[in-house]
Length: 315
Image 1 (cartoon, rainbow, N blue to C red):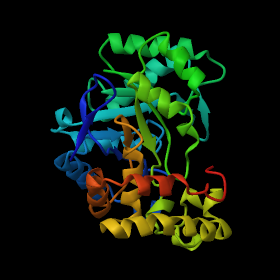
Image 2 (image 1 turned 120 degrees about the vertical axis):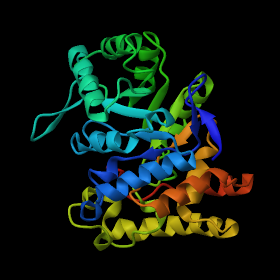
Image 3 (image 1 turned 180 degrees about the horizontal axis):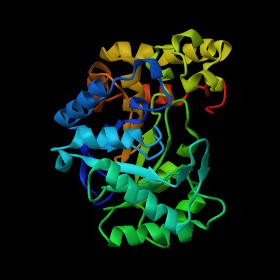
Image 4 (image 1 turned 180 degrees about the vertical axis):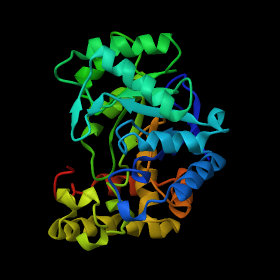
């Protein structure tokens, strides 16, 4: 596995990370199996896919417990990332960026994960009712206390990122970034590259669309939340499949899958751009990891850059 660092001066990580949300939450609920997921996390560490990303609301709460079990006895091999700042009250989700809540959320995450610190702690969403400087100041205290080695922001604006930086260094950001979601290319990605901030790309395969495995809404299992996403309607899937054909054609030149091409395109966007595709199966984990070695030509990158936007909003 090729490596980089988690931003300028951060710990060494594999060029591809592992998102664990789908093991417990949102995606494909009919095919979840904790035993298989535990094995996938272990396999990831064996392959050098050592950035493991979770969040307290995945499950809710059960995904952190799963990751904690998976890392038992191997915690030192992982660069462990989790998130807080989205509150679940038993029936609904809401944002909470108040300092006292963020502190309690991380302490609860540490208990579920079975560790005394995380390597990276994200504010999952900026709370519009709480100045980002106030939330960020609270997170910086958790760094001072050693409960988080570094802190990051998820799904923020460039202005919010700069404001947070004025309080304490931002080690990483996390937002959706893929061939199908490219709005951050104009400002946030270049800024992070200039500042040495890691950009963790969640949904790097467009919620699975770029894998080429979804041709009809019926390909989604019962209870899969993607069934309500605009890009997964029957009409939009047909239109987006034509875009995936472009990605597939490039993959055929390299004996690579469309997903591997999509990940390789992201890797070409910057040294600290880190895709974190999620999977519950060893087969797809191995394919994702192998994408770290796929190098696209300048002409192929230009061909992918020229692709039109997909049909339908991402959410």
